[in-house]
Length: 224
Image: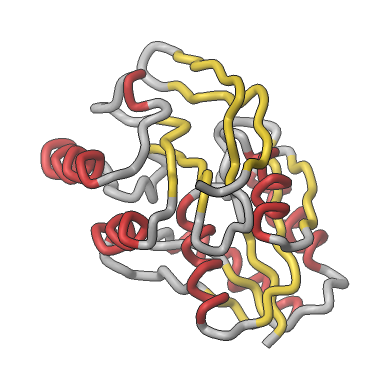
């Protein structure tokens, strides 16, 4: 089946793409919407523009569009960017958000596409452990929930990070995978990348109880 994969540059869409590549789907392109505002209902905000490096590293053509980030317009923008693509299905990395799943399924229905959600309802701990076991390199680039502080920005997701996320979940109900928007991530390397993403310059933007790591300059580098 010829499919496109909806990507954000974050861990969930990257793992979903990895799964379908290994299941024999023909991924013909990756698709991203770049929101103008932080409080997007549907799409990943921090460093979304870096999906061009993600696509190049993966060796896949990218189709992208800037969206307002307003709830009423985001879905129409997604439908617009998918219309006319020569694909049969759409891959996306939703884990537990019924709202996001329902919205994407509705668009797929209107465009006669098969929705493919490889991570749907999977145990959050298993998702993070899979990323570690498969040697994905993922850093946290945004934190938006009580319990996080500025020190989380730029941290790599590893066994120690997972332990701390599990503890935050136990104490404060924070989603281990950030499905409720508690935190956002940036993927720097995956098993299917031909090169890795290297951050050359960044700044941390902190706003009292939340913030994000803004990548100012990045490039592709040889894998180590």
